[in-house]
Structure formats: structure tokens, C-alpha cells
Amino acid sequence: MFGALLGGIVGGLGQASAAKSAAKTSAAALAQQKAQQERVWGAVDPYMKAGGAALGRLQDPNAFMTSPGYQFRLNQGIEGVAGSKAVNGLLRSGGALKAINNYAQDTASDEYGKWWGQQSGIAQMGLSGAGIGAGVANANSAAIGQDATNRANAGMAGANAWAGIAGQVGGAFDRMSSYG
Image 1 (tube, helix red, strand yellow):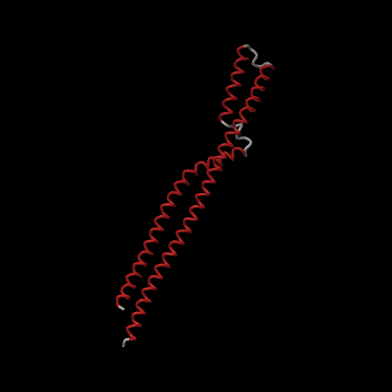
Image 2 (image 1 turned 120 degrees about the vertical axis):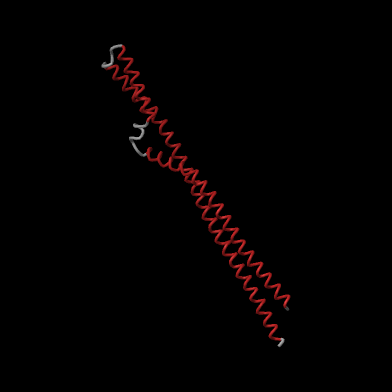
């Protein structure tokens, strides 16, 4: 009788200890997972910001006209055409103005397609980063939910273990009281 009581108490204490250990292990795993997810989020955040900025430039009609690449190519070409005409004394001629106008229009047409492609590519990187970020957020939510479930299960296992101990003790006292 006392052996069964002692066995029940020791077994119940072991179960309670195991449940507590499981809860701690679950919490440690969650902390590691969250830290890893925060590192991933930190890595994709710059891409999301760059993508958002590129999307803003695509929506701004003046952004292309003030872009450094377009301004540089335009200025270099106009200076080249103007310099060529100035050497020949034709800087103020209709032909010089027409050459400068044609160069400016051709450059704008060529550069706009390139600029649009560059900005679209950057915006796409931002969208990809946002997708990764959403995946990280979803994984983090799932991990938190799983941790809560693990801790609740461990708590219930511990409570069941203590209930088992109480039942063993109560049963032993019942048996002892029936003897006399």
C-alpha cells in the first residue's frame, strides 16, 4: 500500500517536472525562431523600402526629368551639339536649334524606357521583400500559437500529474482508514 503511494507520488512529481521542462524548452525554441525571423525581416526591409521609393518615383511625372542619368546624358549631348555648331559659327542657326531639339527628344525617349525598367525592377524587389516579410510574419504567428499550445499542454500535464498524486494519497488514506 505504501509502495503504491510512494510510486504514485514519485511518478506524479516526475510528470510535473517533465511538463515544466517541456514548457521551458518550447519557450526557448520560440525565442530562437523569433530571433531568426527578425534577422530575415531585417534583411528584406531595405528592399521593401527601396521598392516603395521606386514605386513613388514611377507615380511622379517629374521624377524621370530630374533623374541624374537622364540629366547627365541630356546635358552632355546638348553641350556636344552646341559645341560643334559653335565651332562652325552656327550656334544660333535654325539647324543648330533643330539638332539640339532632336537630340533632346531622342534622349528622352531612349532614357525613359531604361529608367522605367530600372524603377520597375526596384519596385518588384520591394514587392518580393514584402512577400518574404509576410511569410516571416505568418511563420512567427504560427510559432507563437504553437508555443502557446505547447505551454498549455505542458501545464495540463503538470496539473494531471498533481491530480494523480492527490488521487494516490487520497486512495492510500482511504485504504488506511478502512483498516481501522
